[in-house]
Length: 331
Image (cartoon, rainbow, N blue to C red; front, side, top):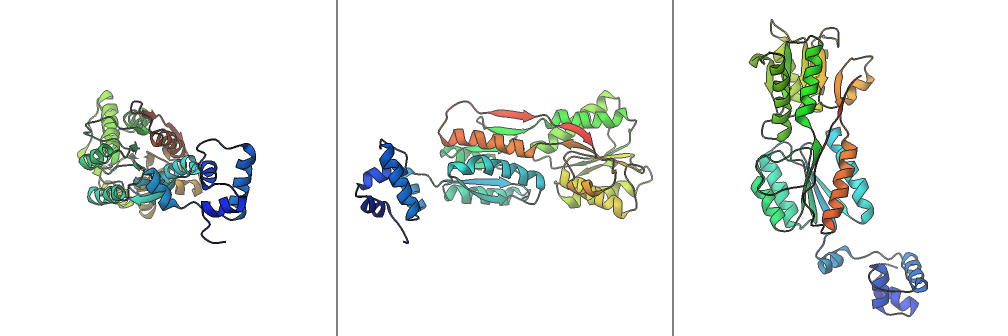
């Protein structure tokens, strides 16, 4: 039977549509016998709820927007997977979109999701969209920030991320204690919190060792693979080449690794590479000796999903701000 309705189930059982509605929406009393009959009949008739009608009645669309900077980045894919695995069993579906580290595109995506009246938005922001974000929150649509905080927000917003400053400090300190004082730094955009927090952690470690960063050995990128490639070219076409390179994003780190390999350098004999985040391609290399920050994107996604469910239930508690502390490992 096609386009089965609540009325069809009611006629099949000889009960009222109100009774069927109570059972299917789990709202109100129905005996266990009636409940079992309604559910089995609905399954037999292949009943599917009308999503549009349900959304109009409850003022919900049962959709959640997830906006991340790079939809191809395994790190953000794992975060998204954790969110989906946590929230999808509760009847919600997702619209995934990439901001591509572009504030203009991100703003367009946010406005589209707002117009579609999604029930909530998870955002790893590219920066500079504070006004749009605050407008959406003021309308009653919750936003949960993941991985990246806002620089200037006027109201507390849920945030799940990492302790970027402390982790970058420890990563830098680890190399300095190994005797590497000539460091090449591949940093991301200062428009986002991960960019300036990680760079600040690096600077603090250098200062504590009585060292100053060399401007010629710092590359300011935007978290793209090409940034890592260009940084490696810049650093290793110099007379005073760095003995170690720190890349503050896994995608840029892959670019560094790729370019160093093309230029004939071997790790860790010729140069040491330290990555803020796992370089998945490094797993196929034989003893690459790459130092990396072991992040927990899936666990972060699960935590975002848990907070998301609370907000969808209209929980009014204070904003949740949690920062994971990754560990530093070597391949």
